[in-house]
Length: 436
Image (cartoon, helix red, strand yellow):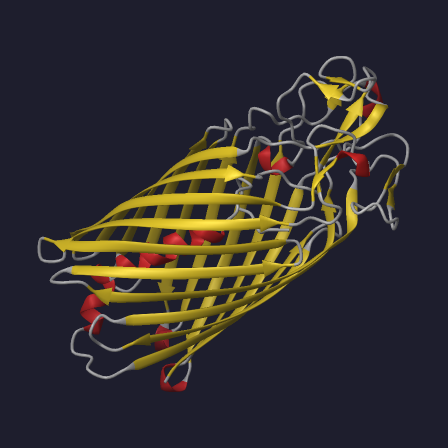
């Protein structure tokens, strides 16, 4: 199961692109530090992230280690290794019912599970392991120019991803302005348990198997400008255009087929189906202020795609500098999106689905709440303290709350049931860094 962003789009390629551009545009903040350094400096950063959702849902443990080298002449290299271990229960897309529901294994080999009456169906067998390796290089390219190259590989038991990225940054006006442009290419292979099923056909039916695997290609282009507004104020604006083609559906998500009263009918569950292409646009505005000692960071991001999603993100951090080099950094984030054009909480027999022919009048449909209309809030704080010889120890704690919009009208059988379950999650990250 590939990791996703709040819009439900894979993050591997875009993460590599943004990392490359961040390195390329860092000259405004990092070149002054590099001046005068004539010997190699190395930095090792390590962290352990623990993520836990409420109600017995997904929990993850993610150790991370990265090594960075700076030769003091604007030549930098980095290598990062990440390991994810995810377990718990994950929503399968079906809607709650007044009676118990039974689901079979995606592979059709048994080992199913039962959801009690009145509860939103969660697959308790969710588990995954992911290993990701990311490398990047940054080099000067003539006067006032830098080039950055990156590569990322991610492996899971049912998903493989490889991405390459590159960016170019150029300084103007005594390094007060930096223009940057980048390109990322990503190739994914999806190999779900039980194979790839035909969308909007009966779920858990092996006869609807389309293939054992499928692929997806993603191309991202990013343009950015970083501007020094004053000695204490820095701004950055990035525009991202992304185009994906191939398999975008979640192979483990289904939709319930209900009658007019809200009870399971006909084929009961069908496989979700999403368009095989996706065009994304996003605009991000970031501003940083360096006060006498403290630092304020605020950003706004607007996102839209041709699936009908529109999203707004506000993010703010305030770094309070303490005595002895320690600091405390509160963090607040607000996110809001509308629903995708093809999002449905369920399908209705005789209206948008016909069980007699196993046909839907809809071209695409998904009950994945990542494509629903929802709002989300993140509140957290980070504390960091210096140790001897340039070492640093940090701890970050965050709380996440997601509220999915419920349907305007519920059929009689669903009255009082948890049709759109809300999500609460807690993140804890312990970090340690050391130069050598």
